[in-house]
Amino acid sequence: MSLIKTDQLKGMIREVPDFPKPGIQFYDITTLLKDAGGLKAVIDGLADTNHGKGIDTVVGIEARGFIFAPAVAHAIGAGFVPVRKPNKLPAAAERIEYALEYGTDILEIHTDAVEVGHKVLIVDDVLATGGTAAAVAQLVRKLGGEVVGLNFVIELDFLHGRDRLPGLAVRSLVHY
Ligand code: AMP
Image 1 (cartoon, rainbow, N blue to C red):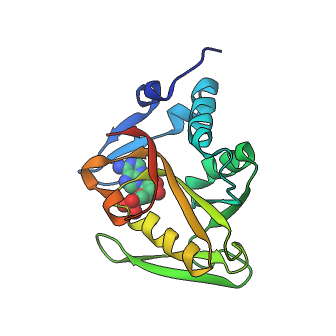
Image 2: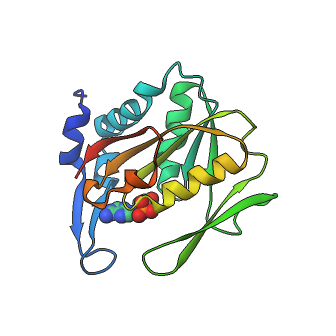
């Protein structure tokens, strides 16, 4: 298996025009994930700057964040916590409602998922407008966690999502 560098990842991501609706260019990571070298490069790339930081918890956002966050947590010796769509979590949960381009969305986290003062890394596949990531950072802080960083596979620079995450360490492997 050849070693793949993070700057080669872009060539492994499939760009699908007009999905899920006209005018949206969808960045499809399944073509990257199915390649053994690509999968290794993406998990190593997300983990490599996060060793030795004392991170307790890696939070993944439903659904595609669940592909990456547990593997990163395993690599850096942290635990994994899911942030889920509404009414999926079985125990007491904290919820946040946030604005989308049209309408609102809701995300939830178990109230006992993050301990006060714990260091938390948030992981997702794509940073687009930043609305989702900002909402998750707020949820973690509500529970008393310290957000030490947000890592993404892909960042859509032209949407300026990181402007909605002021003061937070945002890092992405691939930029468009
Ligand atoms: P946002 O809240 O706008 O930053 O959107 C982030 C979420 O939407 C991510 O979890 C992605 O899974 C998804 N997403 C947004 N835009 C795209 C895109 N162009 N291609 C693939 N996924 C996207």
